[in-house]
Length: 328
Image (cartoon, rainbow, N blue to C red; front, side, top):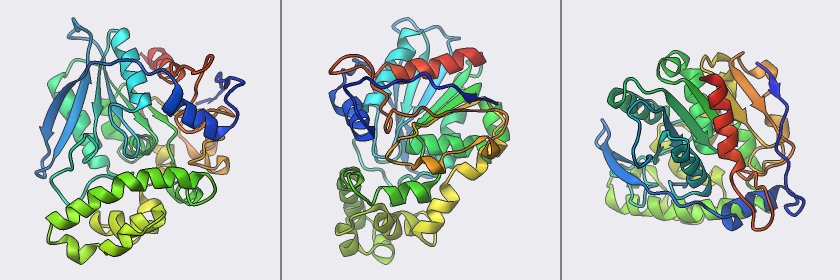
């Protein structure tokens, strides 16, 4: 269980966390990926859309990589495209499992997804395993999905070990209290507004569709909320069974569970990530001997751009596969 010596170095033209984050998401060249979508009906009457990316002539025994995106992300997110492109090029099969409401269509239920919703994650892994029982199965979570997979591999360590060969978490806000508070200040308010501009209309649509929403959600307060404490207090907590935003953040944070992980696990966090202060990052005392900590000084939030302008987003998928291939 080492602290990995980081090998990421930011290009000289990407100065600071915000630039490294935005350059990767908005400016870097994105690869083309051909997806095949499947809709899976969930046991509770909802649905999850899964986008598959596979080689033209897939090997039936090839490993499968299941990817869980970040808050309001999708298979079109820059990091998902980069990872699925690398997956196909290596002859593996990959799929992006969309969180409820994130595939372009609002989901069927009043509830949706959150950072601690590991029941869905386990069901997705089990569904893939049942379809391909002989294929090695790997998991990658990014940002919110990274917290989920970290929580799943720690809180349900035996289940995770029975399903997965190895897993990777990238830029996970494993201390949701520290991370959510950080998003209330300075330039980070730009990110909060971007996310809330996507989340709030979905909840308004649900409010109009579900009579029970009138008892749970203060819709006028929701329309005016400016930060995640307000949003999670008004919607996430009451709809998903938490008493408050603070209880949600505390119970859904993966950090306290990392000491129980039993599957080979890479936790990659840039120390300048604007979504999680460096003081909140896990140390060796917080994790099991199956967790590798890679904490480069730079990288931003799911950034890690390389090369000359406009830059490349190849570092993350190559780093992920290097870890996986070392664990095979």
